[in-house]
Length: 380
Image 1 (cartoon, rainbow, N blue to C red):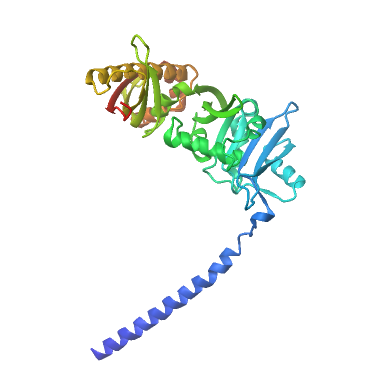
Image 2 (spheres, helix red, strand yellow; image 1 turned 45 degrees about the vertical axis):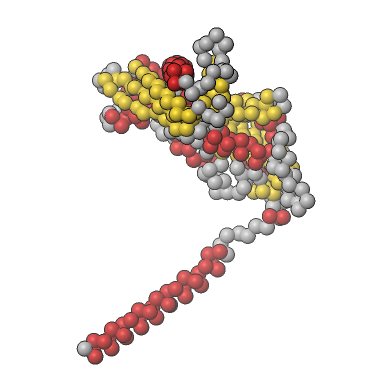
């Protein structure tokens, strides 16, 4: 017993010494690993927080970089550095040559492309450089501008404490979190686009009365921008694309006054059922919305259950009509931004993309909508 105990103590000490040696080795490697990254001092570089690209008449690319100026007494101060080249990837180098400090992309939150540029060049060529750029994160937002990006970039944000780049990225994030904008970033866009026959979407910006506003979504089939979803259709589009807890839907009640009703989503989403034969399949989309009345132009008391039922039924009919119109337009243009191909493929594993292209435009797609108003708001 004494011999076994001595042997055990010796083994314990040996293991403890081995552990300490390994721990000491790991601690020593930390300074070496940290020294691998090239140190950057903020005052010695131009850290871009937004980038914009326009295409010029000679097919050159004009790039604009929003650079914050850090000063203790002033918040939101920034400069816009501009350069021209034949490619988007080279514009950064051109601007850096003209600037007092190199331009880096590590803080970039949003990248804007003009609609004209996207339609002429295509998104594959434009995003290939972004995907390969190690300084850019996958969560950077991509957006399309109706008109010139230069005009949007040079617009003064209403909040003077932030620069235009932060303002635009916050505007998109606010739409995603509390409005009618679906989730979007570089990673999601490329994930959808790079699939066989992949379709995707990006937010749209537009100058309205000299103010920047989100004007809907641009829809892409593989490389090319095909069409747009306007702001009036964005609530139902988001509901078809993903489940969400926030969003605003406005419609007119069919009464003498055509009263405006504003409903805020509490929980909304869609489910999909595939049926029929391989040659003649059909898909039923069931939309479920739980919401509260945010605002009503009616003078009647909204605690009246009969009135609530009327609002629910008319909203169901309105949303069903909207969804059917969008889907038929998608089928006509061979677009599938809501991912019906994946739903069908889950049911029919032998499906090929060629087969899908053949059946999708003629596919029978039915929409059923159920609205449940569970709160009538506090204004009543």
